[in-house]
Length: 130
Image 1 (cartoon, rainbow, N blue to C red):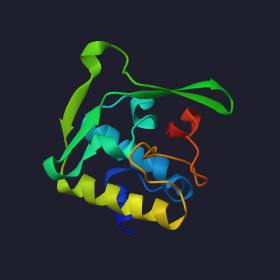
Image 2: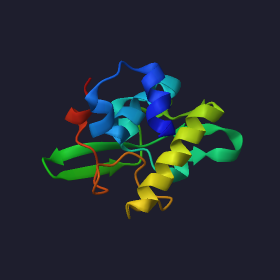
Image 3: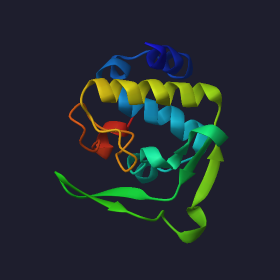
Image 4: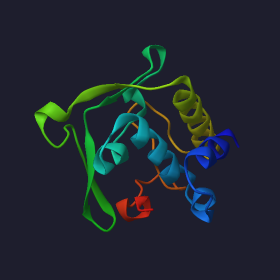
């Protein structure tokens, strides 16, 4: 897929790309935005401003327990809320990812998480380690 091809040019070729494409895609977004891990995990579709090519970093996701997460409407501190310009390439890969989620029956509503596991649940932060 286009997602895997784009990521393969940025990251070493590993089977992790094929087992966890959403987690690996988060590395691409992190590279372009400087977003922290909790900010990536908390990114929702409405924070991607497609027409102006901006990703708005203003919320985060934190684990409360093994299977329970808290979506916080803030970042680490007030000055961490920011708009990050992204390229067409990043937006195209995110659009393809969104279509893939839709095809799998994962919600892509505005308030839905961008990066989820294959069941539409939040990604465990331990799966974002290289």
